[in-house]
Image 1 (cartoon, helix red, strand yellow):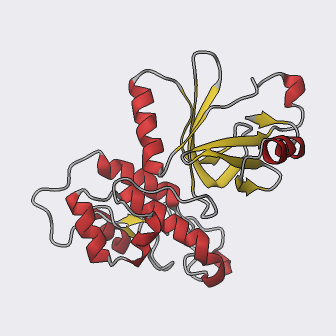
Image 2: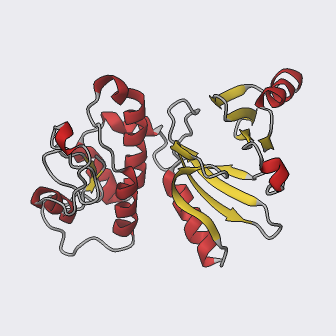
Length: 258
């Protein structure tokens, strides 16, 4: 739902109705738990939109467990001839505000209402069990690369799930350790969709990685990604093409995430 007053809405749904608040982006969004698997989301509408008359008051939202589900919805809707208002990707609100902790898709239903499909990348969001793995994505962080590749090869795990697990762990920890200061998650997700659209090479080359996410040192260029080389002198440099190391990794089925 949209609101012009988060304070009044919080008073009604939180104190009066008694719904538990499970997630908050201060000054922007509130999520209340309605049942074990259902949530009510409320977003603050931008000032001036009331006069513009450009919203109907509600944006039906399907909260997914992983980015791959949002991508699957886009594929299904496009095949059904539904126009995509905002394609699956890094989060944007209905007002056009960038939200890095969100991955979403907007379409419009026959009645003119915006419909959103989204997944939260913010670790503060209550974890949603991954039905394919039967574990929370965070468990992947403790697995070896060999174990993850084996699951990827067997189809028990998708590269997109691995990227989601990496992104969540990065959000949890990297502020303190600064291990991966440059991310390229949108590039990685795009590469994952390309990888999923074609069969693995046959015969498989030795050491094929089946979509394993990897990080590379900033001394190796990644096309379209900042190429700082450890110096603020190069803070504005963007690599025009990938280094031989990165090209070799990607040829072996790796997905560079940072």
